[in-house]
Length: 165
Length: 165
Image (cartoon, rainbow over all chains, first blue to last red; front, side, top):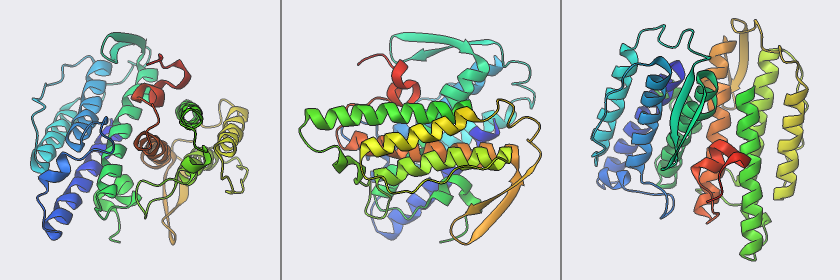
């Protein structure tokens, strides 16, 4: 859970810098939400949503607690920040021991559109939920970097604690 | 450690597909090694090297064992595959209990070019070593996707176990 919280808080920090950068360069920050790294890759808005959902649904599946569903209708960076904030608030409300003793439980999760897999909770976290969060958070970061936002790896790793460039 | 091994093995799988794709499209696979997502981002070769080193040096710092140093002179995909293979071989040779009981030990590591940080080993793994591996592996993936290599997220997450598209 600390991994999910840090990754999402740092993603929010990168989006904050993206918003400020767009304002400074005098274009609407919303343009960034629609950018893609390739025509057949998902836009920034979806990368942020899926990073949030991978953390939320991953935590729900392992803890057995129910996660809220969000509408997937964000089109602005402010709405994406709200999506992250709602996800972080739900993660923060989970009991500290929500994952305790659940390592060996089976977790069933969707793989692609038509299939599911069932593996132990610790393998699910290590090889599915955690890499999924980083996969989408890094894709969002890469997309913003390519768009010219002044980010460095310390923003991704340390978020608000990153020393100013 | 299983996280590092899976992430690097899946990266090797993606590079295999990249090589096959370049051959099918009749350009030298080496071109891919030099591609960047942005002029001020590192090329694919460096992304692969740093993903390897984050796993290797992270494991060395936590276990207290010495890691081999590699020359950082790879220019071909075959050489990058070799870098991954050497890293995986070193990780495989670590004792299974190399990390046991070391969670609360201090780890000191470089942050940027001029600074170091010291934190507990479990926080170092969760908030530095693991995100670093995924950061560079995902950047490599994103770069190959943008270059038109036929990869999907299952290649990143499942590697050779990924169902054919």
